[in-house]
Amino acid sequence: MASGATLISFDKVWKSYGQGEARIHALAGVDLAIRRGEFVAIMGPSGSGKSTALNIIGCLDTPTAGTYSFEGIDAGRLDRNRRAMLRNLYVGFVFQGYNLLPRTTAAENVELPLIYRGVAARERRNLAMQALAEVGLVGREHHTPAELSGGQQQRVAIARAIVTRPTLLVADEPTGNLDSARTHEIMELLAKLNTGLGLTIVMVTHETDVASYAQRTIRFLDGRVASDTAKLEVA
Amino acid sequence: MIWETVRLSLTSIRRNVLRSFLTLLGIVIGVAAVIAMLTIGSGTTEKVKSDIAKLGSNLLVIRSGRPAGPGGPGGLDQVVRPLAEKDVAALVAHLTGARAISPASQKQVRVIFGTESLTSGVTGTDSAYLDARDWKLASGRPFSDSETRSGTGVCLIGETVRQQFFGAGDPEGEIIRVNRTSCKIIGLLEPKGYTGFGQDQDNVVLMPLHAYQRRIAGNRDVDNIYVAADDRTPTSELLPRVEDILRDTRRITPDREDDFSIRDMTQIADAMASATTTMTGMLGAVAGVSLLVGGIGIMNIMLVSVTERTREIGIRLAIGAHEKHILIQFLVEATVLSLLGGIIGILIGLALAGLASVTLAIPFAPSPAVILLAVGFSALIGMVFGFFPALRGARLDPIDALRHE
Image (cartoon, rainbow over all chains, first blue to last red):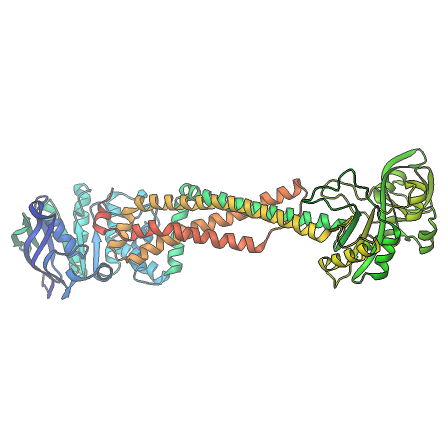
């Protein structure tokens, strides 16, 4: 699939915690570029810095040193509220634990990011219904998370992530809590969104068969990029 | 956006009914206590005022004898010079600003009609008495001037006396025996009810002063003089004039103290009303403390709520909520909660006050100002005590908040 212009770029990004002797570096001078429309899997053992990298990519965190640009914006130097705005406008999040609001219907969960965008109630409802249809949850709009299976909850979370038509979808072990059949379904859905909507997806995973849905796999080790391999399209 | 947040907080309150109810409880009890105390208190004040108004408003009551004061009572050795009709005459002749001036002498006397008897307050007075005491006749006529002068055996009776002797019947023209003399009933007084001190004001018989003096008291004394001020004259202005005239007519030299006392009923009414108002304020303040405790309860629960919903806050921050959105959400939630508590508290407080007004026989006097204040205050409590927890929620780091279990 054709890739567009650079969406995400790390320029000698460091992320450090602690002081003096105890100082540890979660990221140690990472250089990285992800283009628009790519589907990237990030792998690596725990403590390799992959989650830190994902948080920075999703504009939840900022680098200690180096430059992180998103859409050409120096996102690493923006304040809390500006980054919140950036997330609201350009980024969708999918988490391992779904992170839906309990006792809140699927439709209301999906509407949530639109509330912070100031979209009117009726339009919100329409967009939420449309997003739920895209993830194959027609008829479940008024179910609360407790009334839905794990796979269905993750679909609601994906609908919530795409309802704002983001440029980037950040997924943190999206299938970590699912069985293999459900994993397959969710990965198919993400792949479809990538090709169908041209959505850029950056996903952290432990499993190589999950990573195989992506076109590119970046492996982290000790806060550095250990390998960066493109997967050939299998006909 | 604000409306959206209010809707959101209402939803969240509805989803945690038990927790919301427990949060409300402190405010409900506080507001209910304040409203009940203040409403019952102002009812009591009104009751006291109306009781004293029954005795007669704008009224000065003059008695013989030195006023009891810091100088001590007159003492047993002091011969008290009673008031006399010439004192009344002097006041009538010289006092300006009075609506009515009337002498009155009283005694508890056995009154008999047929086989029935009743101990009643018998008062010897003149026709100005009714005006001075703000008393009206239900039927019949007052004493004529000639009856007052000659001391004819006629009388006016109160409602209690009528009921004892005549039931619902018409007493006019009947003859009753008072002590060893008889008198003809010429009129019936309007009922006044009981005083705040439990005295039946309707168990009375009024007769001309001269008839009373000759046939019942056996002297020419006047026990009290009632002076009612007219509408333009405050009693406080009337009092020194009365004192001057009485000192003059009783020939009291400037170096000696008054040998009579003047009581200002308006002053007594004001004093008692202000005493109950002070009492009400104190009770209200005590109840206000419980409102404060209720506010701390709100803060407590809101802190728990913020901790409990850390993950929710994390989600909201991750998908693009600004700090202010979270702050407003929790602030509105706290305010809506305490406002709701305030409204429920007002209803309960008014119900309690209503119940108390029935059982204590005082007027039900809810004050719109107090109610409005309670609403405003409970909203304020929500905002003040909700602010700190809300700020804590808003300042959370989305990454930490999302990791929170």
